[in-house]
Amino acid sequence: MAIDSLIVDVYEGDVGGAPDWKKLAAAGRPWCGAIIKCTEGVGYAPPWFTRNWPMVREAGGDRYGVDWFRGCYHYIRINEDPIKQAQLFLAMVEKAGGWAVGDLWPMVDVEGKNNPVSPGKAKIEDCVSTWAGEVERATGRKPMLYGNIYLAENGVTSHMGCQTLIVARYTPTLPPTIYNRIGWTWSGQPTVEPPTLWGWQLCGDGTVLAAGYPSESPIGAVDYTAMIVVNGADAAIAWTRAHLFAEAPAS
Image 1: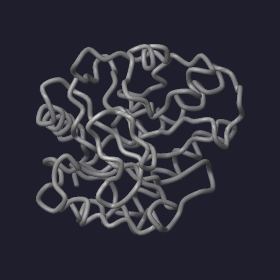
Image 2: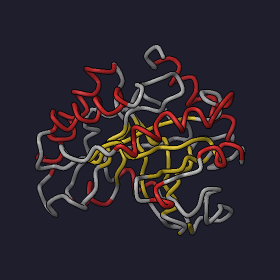
Image 3: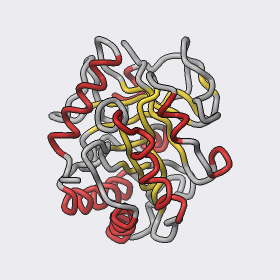
């Protein structure tokens, strides 16, 4: 398994709130872009996002859409209206300049923090599926799912309208049981039919146990995800680029 194309995951509170995107892009491979937090629930929609969304694209320069990708996510609150959450997310992306051809799939983050401990499988699946359906209706793109333990603890195995997965696991290895238990597969090559694993978030704020990976990104100690595919980084990037260009709305 080759896991050597890295995407940082940054929110408003990371690295003093002012990530140096140009420094990250200038560092070159294996650093291949950023996923940043856009919204949470129905009330969190920071100006930080509208400033940083275009900056991530601009920092990539000629790399953008080639081996530099931009993404953003919504942190879902299970007890809040999923349609309103989706509309807030979509409105913030539009306010920040909208989608373009080098962007990753819209992403939904499903975790236990700020959510009930045991809302039950049906509650989570209904909320996330409704959110995903609204995003797909508006953009034509099935979202990416981010999650692990909270989904497993509540017995969630549905893809919930999402086409691919990032799984968080800060351990030396990623056993297949970790993503199989929440209903996802990986056979060495990501696919969107049927949906499958795309990335492994193996580093959390500078803590990384997988051998051979840096403890910090060029912009500091932040979470980062490895794009997973056989045959190395070039294959991972080529696969991602092909699917993004095939799906992306006009810039």
